[in-house]
Image (tube, rainbow, N blue to C red; front, side):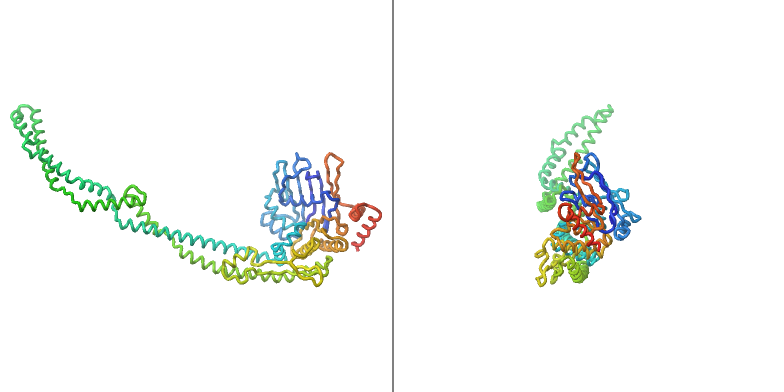
Length: 565
């Protein structure tokens, strides 16, 4: 429960401290007096965005602080314990906004993240805005309210987790199948390439050997003719080199014994003559061995063409790279994963989880259907206390997945919230036809229906601060008195701050805070004052008639006395 609030340098409030007791506190004031400032300050403390905030003094920071007694809020205490934030029952939350636009959040003096403040907000505060009336027309919000009444959080969490998991598995299965198809195509390509290369039966260095043999066979005749001519010139001809050297040696040998150098030259020439003879013999043998062999030449050409074709196909430069590619493809073929088994296992898991999902959905639907009946009756009883005695109320639950046999159709009919759609039906008049709330309820009726829902739900939640902003829209007279009594009953369980223009609602509150503008200085100032009995009487008189007169004071006094009894 809110026990106090401190506002510094916020909008038109330079400094303000307020204390709150149990029960109901009403904020009143003339139009434009800034009744929403207090609510805005609380919202900012809990991490609401602060676009273009105007400080009273732009050179100073804005500081907002609220203190709470959380001794009766076990859900919040459990949350704080999980966050490592132990408390003794009192919780002080604060936010500072610097002129540069930066924010800092504090919990009992320790700095915390904005996300933590936002997570605590629904555990501590229940806001009721006029815009909630429009949300009440939405089926999604109606379902949310029904789930709160049914306390379906665990069932919803279970279904949502199963729904997301099944969706993820289906997506994974699709990816696996796509991967398997891609792998199949790649495997076929690799197998074809490997088979082709294996069939080619390439050998290391084969291309060079073949090219050399091809070049030799291509020029066999020319080489033989050249070798024969060389042999003839060196040895076989009448005027061959061998013959001429023999003639030279005949003359030199006569005098070689007379001169060592001459003897050495003679010996060298004899060695040369021997080599010429050997080389001439070798050339003669080569001439006999060389054969153009066109059949072999064609075979080599075909083999080289095959190698070149493979090189071109695979965009490689030499046959060694083809052998490397063959080895790589063999390795890749051996390393392909068996996705078929993974797909089979996942399909089985999906089938089993789909069955569990349907069970979870049915369990959630049954809980909602049961809660719809009890909530309809409780709302009818509570609405009757709000000048809607003849009203009827019914909550309809429709299982959107009904008849959906195919898994994908079933999933498409669901959301993470389950398989159900929710519709509130209402009739304000006896004998009137029940129609969707959006088609028949007026603004005043919506406000009261929402208030009745808040009361019913409050019985199932920990103690919270409830902020009712303009709950009196579209009502007056006896209806306003009934609404006032209704809020007062609600305030026995929850601390309530209510912004109102109606004296009937203000009169029933435990305390009243008036907001007033003071424009005498250089800048407008808004002050919040908890009213003493006489001040409150005058404020109620103003709210009743617009001014304070003996008649309005008497009416205000009668109103207070009426509620006291």
